[in-house]
Length: 87
Image (cartoon, rainbow, N blue to C red; front, side, top):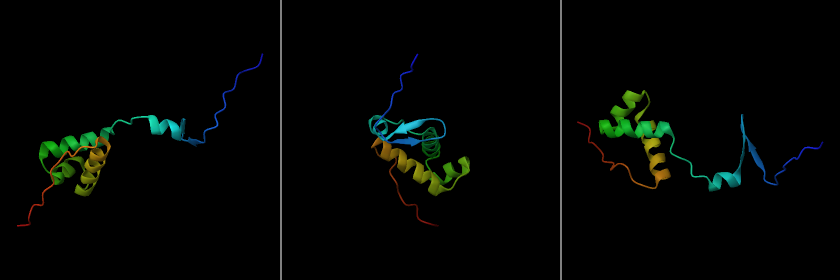
């Protein structure tokens, strides 16, 4: 008894546990990363990237980057960024 083998003409990108096709990535709506949402929540609660960074154990730049990536993915501005003068 022969088995049916499905062969794709698409070029796969192999990962450790599964194969991803570029066409599938274009069609998929990827939800925001949970880490980015957690970072956003901390920054919103503290109203400060610096205090959120302290809580999360990362740099303020890492918080800013995560929030900016989330804003890009959601296509929405989540924070109004203002400069705080040094005392």
